[in-house]
Length: 346
Image (cartoon, rainbow, N blue to C red; front, top):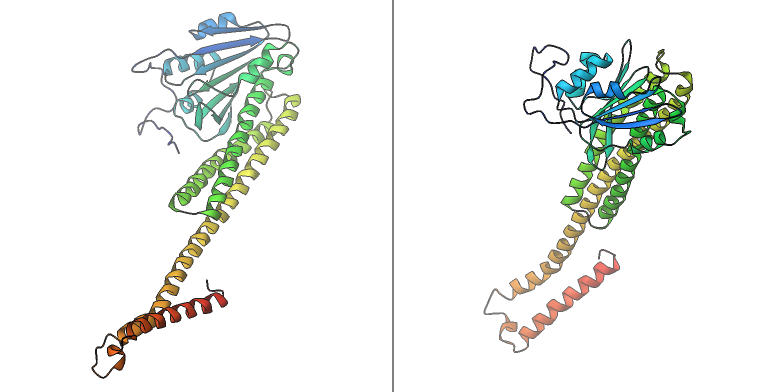
């Protein structure tokens, strides 16, 4: 689990405008569209974004990287983003949350995709006619949204910025299902291992899965509140038509949370099964050792009896004494084995 970054004690709240110690170019992309047209740009500054925006259209600005605080500060100044929200963008990872401001809404989510198997923070700012997304690194789950924007007549092209924000939110939520499918496959593999051949590595796998599910639960639980707040909060930035779609996203979050809780319960039961299997395995070993020790007890008695070397023992001077003692030991051992098998102890 990654730890949240904090500023030094007593630092000024909000984001201070200063460039990184070793500034690097952060990819900045713009998609601006209306129902009739769409344009895409790779730009170097916020000023270029403003120059390329389509009048009366929706602008989607995506920033891949949060290392250049100067750039992020300029974005905040141009679009009226609160400094405290920008501070949360920089100090990733944050707990998923939503904050309502006068002219925009700030949403923090955790996104999973092949380039970020442990998850990464994605920040979404929703304004009247713009959406700004800031990611920790390149790569996301938003490509289907880009393709839908490129397609003439799509719902995204016919709706406003709030519908775009909903679509991005829904894409992040839906990306949890492949993660849960991977947990399901891992669970089935561990379950077979627990039943067939449990070992120390099996316990490590179970603990790793439990820790991963706990982290996923820590993410999904507050995201349920994020979607619910968008549904319930009175704001002009989210239309009633979009709230209908948000209800579907809320159902997805609830379903995801239910699956996580189910897997956590199964993992608890699997750990109990592992402990039981290890105990049964140990009992089988102790049972085998006990049977062997029990068989050797009378054999040890016979060997000890004829090892006393008393002069009055006629068997010691009998030429058949040695083979007879061996035969007696074999007969005793065979008789005990037959008795144990009849009692189903073997």
